[in-house]
Length: 157
Image (tube, rainbow, N blue to C red; front, top):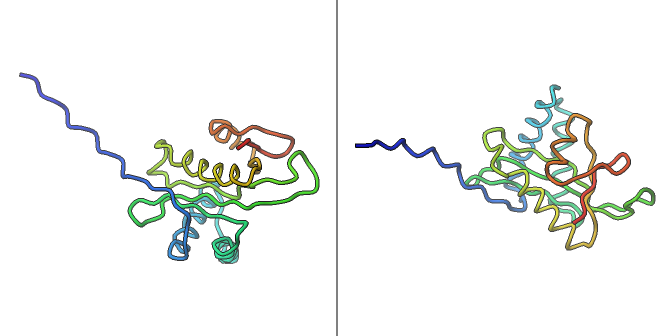
């Protein structure tokens, strides 16, 4: 007689969606967690400033915020803006502003799916994706298919 080990717990289903006003507070909380994860405290001024930016992004046609939802609760987000820069290798691009996933969901492809939402938006606009990265984060972005181009990270859509 053999016994079977219990099945490992299933990861909660995660759905990627455009953020709406009902997600704003949670997105600001996730941004604060992102900042704390870099080893620094987030001031009330920075928190309010990001909240103001995120509110504007939800309303602006050239900016997007996507959320990773578990049920109705945001557990990660990706923010981006369509930009035009009169210099550099990409005069028009979708520029990634921030990506954060709750540590409990990491390793499940959530960051890749949030990045894919941004890539689809860039592809629809016919432009590449750009972003900035601290040196210690380069390996993460390269794992998602990004590469260094001068002082920017870039990914063709």
